[in-house]
Length: 256
Image 1 (cartoon, rainbow, N blue to C red):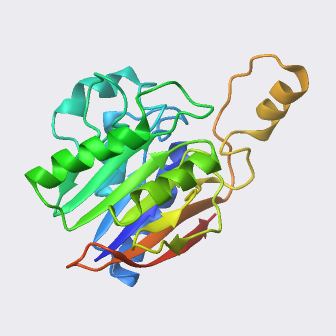
Image 2: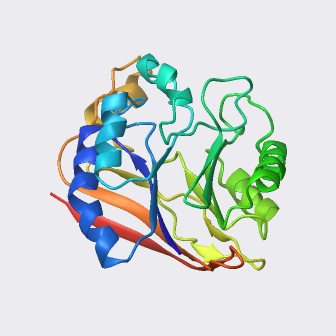
């Protein structure tokens, strides 16, 4: 089984890049499932039903999210209606669901707490969800999108879940890392997949507004940058019988 995880998709440029790259990439790499972090697809903040539909029509199978999932209020009523969209499972008593099982694959979304909003413990939440889900369905593979800021917390989650899930793939920082590996007990790990957004930017946003904020400390309205777009992703190959990862590799593609 070959599963592709696409890093945080930023606004219209990111959506257009996925539309152009993904259909051919699915065929080229014989990809069975595509998971994408979509919490920034609507103007850089949040997700709407329309923008979610664009990505699903482009070949994305499951959408994950993070702290920006609530930025576009219109999506909230749809989060309990079967849309293949998950929010971090460690949000307490929130709309939507923290995981789903589709075509025998479980996709679990968690959010870190270091330098992030205070939520329930992601480690204990992971254990609780896995015990519940495996009791109900016994998925062939388990993919975890860990939406977190601190690299130490992400690495900790990788080691905590080693041998319990097929992959722990980090999102949120929009800066891809080069530490893709399969951990000793068979879990593929990557600290951050990166982003699908404008290369000439500050994590997807127009550089002038970001620099003004750094230089003055004053609030600024950020907008999605323009120009060439890089799609950062990671391809995980998983043994169908054991659910353990066989390999992981970064897949990065550019479009003008």
